[in-house]
Image 1: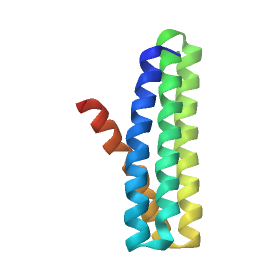
Image 2 (image 1 turned 90 degrees about the horizontal axis):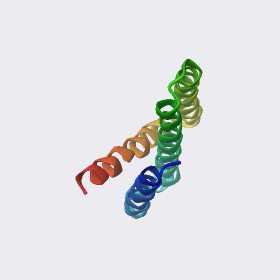
Image 3 (image 1 turned 180 degrees about the vertical axis):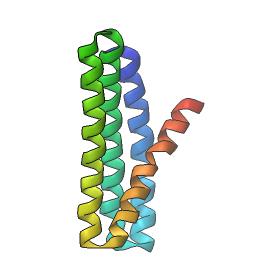
Image 4 (image 1 turned 30 degrees about the vertical axis):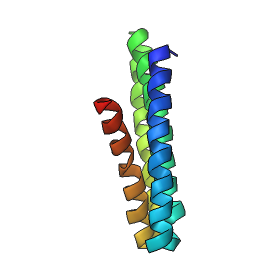
Length: 117
């Protein structure tokens, strides 16, 4: 893995940790039952981000059709995994899915902050 990719992952992780700590404090104060679900969404988003970065790097460095197919299959698999987790949470409680989507969407704040800085 390239050094710039590792550096990006570390900086985004720092932003995610700060957002996660802030989020735990706010959700424990307002919506106690959903704090772990929001953190699950943020964690899954970060894992998905890392997997996407690594697979995209390999696909760009190895410009063969094999790696492009692997990138496409991994994209489909990651989307399915995220959706299955959301469906399981929805079956437990429909508001769990909203909290999960909120946590998953908060990853974009980290990416935006990384892009600004």
